[in-house]
Image (cartoon, rainbow, N blue to C red):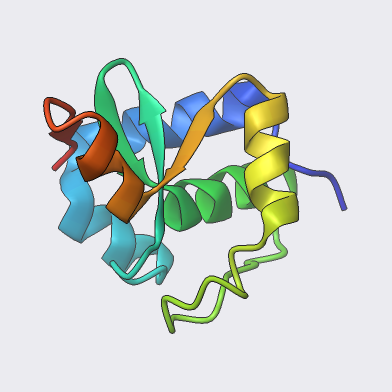
Length: 107
């Protein structure tokens, strides 16, 4: 199995923007609970949802998903580090509001 590529993450973000949060999380079964966001083009995205979709794009037929508990232990440090290694900024949701209240939540 292959980790998400930068292209698969961007493709997932584009789809998220096109269909919106509710449709995206329903379509891919990721739920809306997340302790982490991806910051991209001055918008925030649920990191777990984007990672799940991006992973499945590069691993067709696997239908992989995090458990829908919102727990930090399921979207682990290794997932955050992989996204950061691709050049994305990943931040705890509570930290985002403390450090940059001007960021817009993608919906």
